[in-house]
Amino acid sequence: MAITYKVVGCTNPRGAQGVDYATNRATKTGDYDFRALAEDIQHATTVTKADVVAVLTAMKEFIKQHLLQGQRIVLQEIGALQVNLRSKCFAQSIIPLEAFEPDTYIKGCGIRFRPEAELLRYVRSNRTLKRIPSELMA
Image (cartoon, rainbow, N blue to C red; front, side):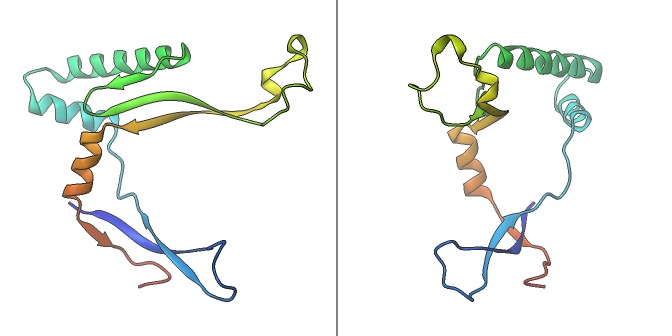
């Protein structure tokens, strides 16, 4: 199996005027969904598919619940999930504490995934690459 990528155009803010720049971007070859994960776990273990689906469904619900409580979800040997906020910067002295409305300064909410070091090392050391055709390099 290879990580597929294609060459795409990009802008280089420090680059010379009139020069075209390109970069490599990983591409998606498909999705590995909940059902496929459950089937793979079932085939690799002695657990029934119904039990695997029940455990994965419960895990998903507990992850959502604990993320909303502000906890970091640590999945040993996989990585960690944590809620992050995108917010506008503001001068602390301008807004009195009693009049502060956080929703007016928070632009968005996301989930950050930080992979475990061993997982990252594995992917980096075992990767093979395959370029797919693109407009820049057919």
